[in-house]
Image (tube, rainbow, N blue to C red):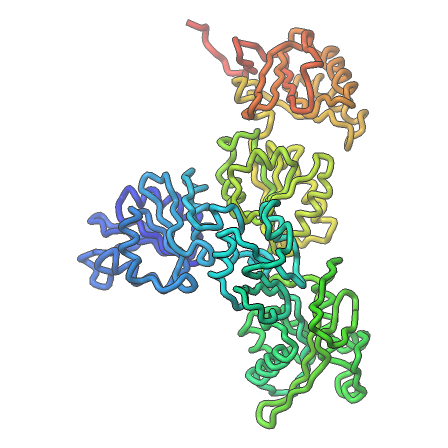
Length: 636
């Protein structure tokens, strides 16, 4: 997203400098000329020494307005309104506009909230500054996803329709029907469970959302179209067939079948056509991928209309039908079943999850060439988006302890997945339109696999763990699953974002118990055999580490903790300080100081971290201190 940043005053520039790394490389930064000059990357307006520079802020805004997708102002909202008023045209063309006050308390989405991306930008800016995002769209107030962004996460394309009419019906709470023939239904999880759009199909709708590969029949009510990209077009053509003829022929075929141009996923053809100019130009013009298949691969695909003449010419009895079916099979592997409109009567040929909707048709021109086209539907939509995984450590639970990087990731994520308790803790940082999926604490593997599958489909997925994701969290499991699936390390992209682990939170509450060498050991024997755990406990106790015990005791699992106590009592004196830290930085926090000899196992459960001091650790009031070894003078 190409952005312009306007910060007229020195104070505004100082605030803006903290935002520039967030905005990326494609940002132009403007400020009022300073006699001492402006540091890079700032450009000056109103500089009497530079006659080529804009003479005023208004001129700088007008100059950059048509060149960018977003404008970020650190300025009074009223001033921004007056600056942009003469430039506004419509929400489809205007750049997003976000306004931040000089104190950095508010990030206001002023214009282009949905399609323009101002709401998303305001959230990211607010997360960076610790500010409050101010979003005033109707969907935000209702807690529902924006209608005009509904299909973006899945790579769908927006079709024609009365977008204002349907959005108004949603805002008024009137019955809106949904007709979906293909594509993921994951989008429904982003809507409140009690919303009538998700819960039922109203008998007398006043508006309609049509999701599918076909165009909707006339209904007389406001209708909008989202088109999952499930159609693969098989193409065979003469050498030199023009892009104009190819596209015109394709549009005629789609129109005759009632199919949407926006539902096209890509093109497929014979390897021999890899250098066909008209075909390459067509794909480039619409951002479509092209699959090139060798003749022997196409020859093995059963098709309804094989041709011996074609076999003699290129080595396969079918190009268009076979290529369409093979591409649809490759890109559409999945287990979804779709409803097919009853108004469509042509025969279909099933093949590995792919369906031939349009058997081959030939289009010829005396001057522009000839082509053969066929269309197959995949069982799953194609998305050009590259998915991303954030493996986030949310810290001990208080949102104030969350890192800036984690806040930014949560603001940008399209799916947030985790254990229900962890989702509840970050709920204040989430927003309408995000898919939130909770699963039981024992379903870590299913969580990892589901998150990976979503990211592989192009979604931005946040997998949350309490504490640090890399310390008894989800990071290791997700990475293991990725590697076993043949991950290339690139797609989906991945970031592990650190968090404050439980032993760090406990140490902060206690003072300085981790000032010397320490270790963490989990007592859960669900994944690690007890003899291995016992060996580690004995080694840690003998080595005089400060030890943090995770997952110490559950209702069904009592013995491991009792055995661990005995191991430490054999290696350390009974007066060794111990801290029991439970629900730190959350409601119901408790912190109890005791000793190895006096520790009551009944005070320990799965939400408790047990911190055992080393031979030098001592208690001072409510603090535990482990000396680092500095030579200190006598106290005065």
